Image 1 (tube, rainbow, N blue to C red):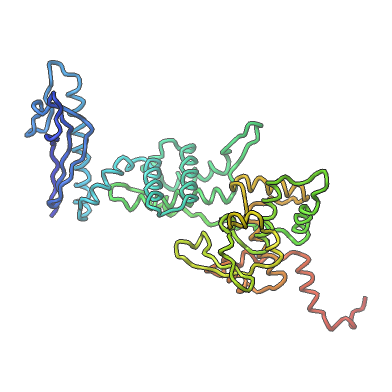
Image 2: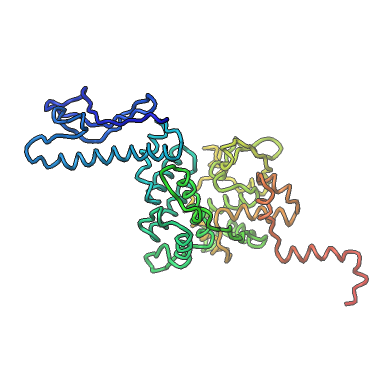
Length: 413
């Protein structure tokens, strides 16, 4: 049986000269006591502790009615929490009670719950900054669709409407009037994030979430991986050799280009390129390090540092700081890559991760060993590696032509 009580108290140790003291609701659960501040002050002599009510300080006191209503609401909130646990036949501890008090205001509004939960998880380092920012983007999208987003309204129809809203409504219009719509991958991510937070909310005793919303189907879309073929990669490398032309590279463009080409020959993620340093180098032309993505499990990988890749390291910067590259922030990095693509006559949209895709493509057309590629790229699952196993039409033709090797004398034309 649950042991629970909450009573109105005052801090007698810190009364003002006028006799005012801070008010609390003192909660006792299984002999554990904790004071919950009401953020109100009142004269001790004007409190009926037995009735748990404030008495007027003077005739027609304008605050006493509102203050008593607020105290009654807070007591009711505490009682409702206790009652919910009793109905569910679940033990209520002080730790659980404190958490329920914190999230009580989120029990009706999904947006409020998302704000509370994503901040809590980020502070506790349960999620990374990128996941935190993705949740924020999803929250903003939900607010544009439904400014109240009450749990009682979130069902299968609501989820269908949210997806339709993302598919047909722009999320931004720039100063030039260009309208930006959500991409298929962004829509999938927002739906997946919303479902994840709905599932978290469903675990709270005070919050009801419709299972149809949590189980809303959201198959992951197939993604076309962008990579550079050998001709396109040569065009980028040639930019470094055209420094004497009128269209020469800026200092930032040159630094970014060298780092990007380095990723094409090493498979490093951009997060690791920023951290790449001389300490990673070991004997026999290898680098060994813990990828940023693996830092939680401290899993090291060892990959070759090819001479082709090594020549793009900023040796002067590495000598003074130890780091291989001196790069702008990632937004500027990706902006610069788009400038470089235009200079090289490349029509593809190049981002930082295209370098890693390009390594996978080059490895597969030259070596073709997907399991070897898995080790080089540090993947746990072979399915992850297979998306890098690109083959273009030239490779298909060259590979197929090998079938007829030894039969050329039988060709009739």
